[in-house]
Length: 219
Image (cartoon, rainbow, N blue to C red):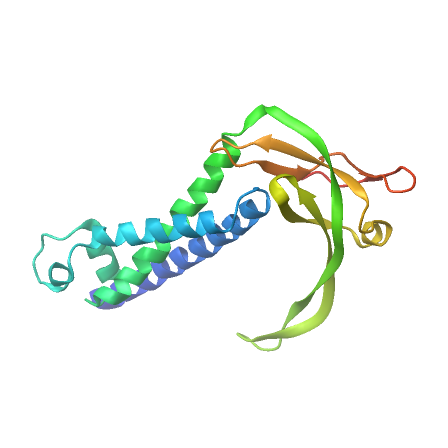
């Protein structure tokens, strides 16, 4: 009975951890879209954090031994996987630490931003495009299939330091906006020095031939 309870506990905790990592990864992707930063920087942070964290497991020989003098991380992963596989635990430790540290990096940069540096800047639209996605539909008790397609519309703008970033827009506005138009975005200095950008919380302006005003939802 105790073994069954342990297995249930492992499964539940493993599921929670997996869900948390998926949410955190989504958070990283979202924060990256709001940050003027070269993609290589978060990748290096992820790899460095993950690699350094593996040392917390101890040596492979200590990890596999029956000694009780093991690190907390060593005992945790051995229990989760119900295995003394060092490689499996090292991969889990690497991914978990990399995701957590990278997310913290973006969160600190965002929430510690200098709000006094907030200003609006006119930027040029470099591309107007759309991405095709699919709804999912349930076809069985535990199975899903790809459903009807739908499109999400974006404009790509040229930001300072030769960075280009996509901005989600409505279908109607994607038809009105064109390459070469100018729009306003909000820029702030991040807490770690990396600029935060967002579309203006109230208005967007098209300024190619004539000024016309479009209202967007707040973000």
